[in-house]
Image (cartoon, rainbow, N blue to C red):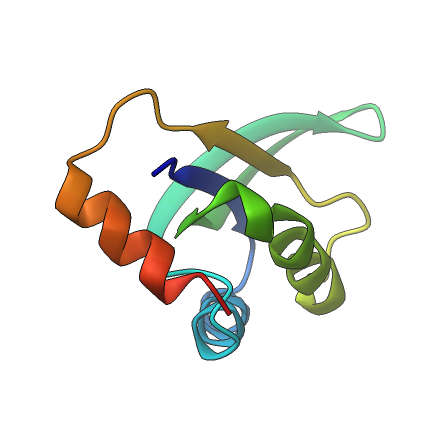
Length: 104
């Protein structure tokens, strides 16, 4: 079973929890980890340095479109970073658990 790790960031911890809860509640993801991070980036010609919250979303490839749509529905950024990475290897029992809890 293939696992997909989807990443996004947001500037508000409560909003990060809202997104995570919606993804879990709709069975779009098996697990969402939230980490506090510092981000440096260029936006509208200015260098930004902000505290953000990174969401690491564990799901399956078949659910990506729904995960992206839910993130976009709840996100407050004009241009949210939404990236997906397929796991090259994964512990079989864990991958099965992710698949069961992301199957909708």
